[in-house]
Length: 364
View 1 (cartoon, rainbow, N blue to C red):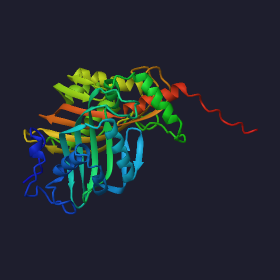
View 2: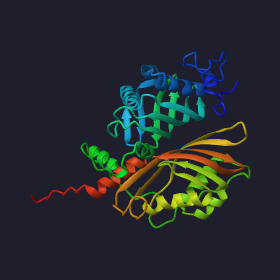
View 3: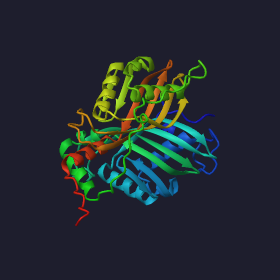
View 4: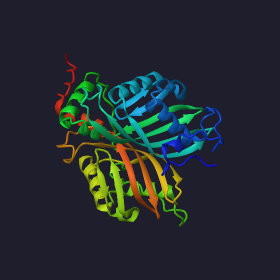
C-alpha cells in the first residue's frame, strides 16, 4: 500500500488509522502508517487538537527552524512559538493541500507540506492587539524527519497577506516590526560579488540534456537558470504552460505566461544583480500523471533599482523561498511560491531610515 494521497480525500479518511504500513517507518510511533500520514496527523494533533506538548516527542531537542526572519534553535523555541501563534489565533485550522516527500526511514524523510490556514485573530500577536478579523493564508513547511522527530524545518507563510487581512496598515506595520528588530542589531555581514558570473563573464551555460526523455530536474534547473540568471524571459513560453496559474506571496494570483514574466521583472528590476540558486529539489508523481515538485531556493541581490520596493537603497538582500510546482505535459502548469517578503520590506525600511553608523577616526 503506497503512502496516503491528500488530493480529494476527506479529513476523516486522512486521520483514519490504517492497519497496514504504506512504507517502512522504523523508529516512528506505531500509529503512523507512512510519512504523509505522519506529517498530516501530527500537525492536526499539535495545532487543532491543541496537543502542543507533542512537540516534545515530534521535534528533536536541538532542532533547527529556518523562518522568514532567521534561524532559531531548540525544541523549546518551537513550543514557545506555537503557543504564541495559538494565543493569537486559537481557532486556527490547517488544511493539508498537498504533501511532497522523498527519502526513507534510514537516511530520513523530507516532506514539503502546503497548508491553507483559516483563523480569527482574537488574541495578541506579533502584529499587535487582536482585531477579531478572519484571516486566510497559505504557507509551506519543509521538514527533515528522522525516527519520529523533525530535525530541521524551513517554514514560510504569506505574512503580508495576514497583515492586510487583519486590517492593518502595511507600511506602519513594517516600520514598527523593523524598528523592533533594530533594537537587537546583528553584526554587519561581509558581502562579496553576487555569483551570477565571474567578473565580466556571463552566467555559466548549463550542459545540454544527456537524453531526449523528459527530465523533471532538468526542467526546473534549466528554466530557473535561463529565466532568472540569463534574463531570457522569452524562455517562459518554452517552460510554462499557456494557462499557467501562480499562487504567490502577498496574495499575488497570476494567470498566463506574461503575468509570470511581469512578476520576474518586478523582482529583477529591484535587484538587477540577483542570482537564482536551487538549494533543494525533489518530486512525486500524482495519480493523474502530473508531477508535483518541492523546491527550496535562494535569490540574493542588491536593492539597486526602482520598482515594487521603492527607490533603491543599496541594501544587500537575501530572498529565499519554497515552491511547489505542478508539471503537466512537460511544462509548469501551476505553482505555489512563498518567500520572506516581509523580511525584505523590513530590511529595505531600515536601510532607508536608519542613519549610517559613522566609522571611528583612527587618529582619535
